[in-house]
Image (cartoon, rainbow, N blue to C red; front, top):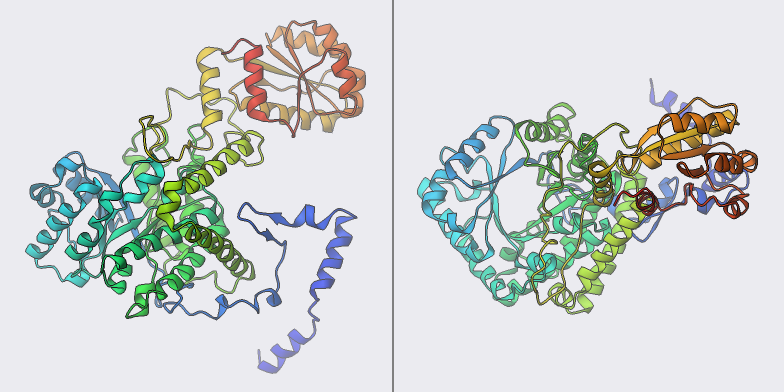
Amino acid sequence: MSNNNREKLFTEFTAPTTQEWLDKIEVDLKGADFQKRLVWRTNEGFNVMPFYRREDVLKLKTPEAMPGEFPFVRGNKKDSNSWYVRQNINVTDAAEANKKALDILNKGVDSLGFCLPADMVNAETIETLLKDILCDVVEVNFNTCKAHTVELAQLLVAYFDKKGYDKEKVVGSINFDPIEKMVMKGKDTTPILAQAAKLIDVLKDYPNFRCISVNTEALNNAGAYIVQELGYALAWGNEYMQQLTDAGVDPTLAACKIKFNMGISENYFMEIAKLRAARMLWAQIVKQYEPKCDCACQMIVNATTSMYNQTLFDSYVNLLRTQTEAMSAALGGVHSMVVVPFNETYEQPNDFSERIARNQQLLIKEESHFDRIVDPSAGSYYIEHLTESLAEEGWKIFLRVEEEGGFLEAVKKGTVQDDINTTNVKRHDDAAKRKEFLLGTNQFPNFTEKSEGKRPVACCCGCGHNDEAPYKKIESTRLAADFEDLRISTEEKRVPTAFMLTIGNLAMRQARAQFSCNFLACAGYKVVDNLGFKTVEEGVDAALEAKADIVVLCSSDDEYAEYAVPAFKYLNGRAMFVVAGAPACMDELKAAGIENFVHVKCNVLETLKEYNEKLGIK
């Protein structure tokens, strides 16, 4: 097609204005409130419109950025979007850990994370652990007791020097973050902070080996909103920059030794935008320290899929959660990524679950080619808006923390912990009311699934420790934990049968029965649906024949005035009676003695706990 024809084709259409779009939407809404129906009020502190146009991003600076250039909103690379596929290994036996590492390196992994107990930090362990691993080809990361981190760094440098590695080709990290323990456990680790400058000095000749960590992954796993993780990550990182430079560390060297370990939640586009905003804001922060080069302003991020939203029941749904999270991390331009195995909530991951977790990354890299295009979301009106909005709200958190005297002071005062704990409580409350969905747990549970002995593993964020600590700590459990506890308790003691007495209007009785089945199955109840009954007496008789503990009347609001009281009286206390819905005649039904109703405004968790108590399941 010639240019003239192409131009003619486009000029045949008149681009509608924003007002014309809004006018059309108003007509389609038929009088409904645009703000209430279509504007998304996010937990991050800003609203999201149902559509965006070019004019919405013309005022933004982010679309003008280039990949690999300050402020790195579009990523640290210019030629690809490649990232390290990382798998972590808990080391109890150095030889076995080495064997496992060599095995997974042949299965697609190119980044290893070793977690070493303090008593294994010695030269012999390092020799055994890294045998036949080419540390100038594979990224190597280490985590141990913070008090032994400098010793570990010295052992690694000695090992690298012994092997004669090109110092620039050794890529990896040591996870030194004493502040994390203060945030998560309330411990006073300030004496260990002084080791940071010495640690950097030990590793100063290895430009791509980082050793000061900002572990906001812990906040993510405690339920933090995306904007909270972003804002606190900036303040946390700046705290280390300030302390290091105050200790005499060159700003360029200090910045180049900081690594961010961040979590990735299920909010697909928002997480992409979070990573873009984080790089942009971190670059601006580091720039204020006047580093010798812009490359020091790059934010290096290892992303780990969230544990907060993982579930014990219907656990294969965790694969869907971690897959979209991995996609967000990849498109957001991370340095490396860890996908949490789907079964980590209730058991030690096995070969199968670890293989699936690795392959989730390999799938998007090798088959979907997510590693080829730098910042593919750039130019999206929606994501550019999210990036800018998250940056604004995250920056507010950063400034608020700085006004308190910095991140360390805020942690000592407990304001960071209080903020995350408040969010966690709200999210659990939202899950209880199904304002926040967990597929397979509080919404659309598998009616026939049993726990089969699966039990939640101990929380890894330090929330289970009751010993005295000088500071506040974060108290958190996974979002599904309350429902899981209820369901396991029901399963262990007695599983009641809930019978759907469907009658009247076909569409309404089917909809009410489906809603009620989903509602009651969240506690592990056995649910029995039915095609319909001609009379309430017939339905009650069928329910009693099925040995039902609960009879749920499912009909239309108008028909409840006709059916509910006769059904309740005929049942005569032989089973719990529940009405599905919140009909206009509810007060009259309550006056007749009917006290149980299930509907969309119920607190599902509290209602089910109440039903268990009434049924004697305690």
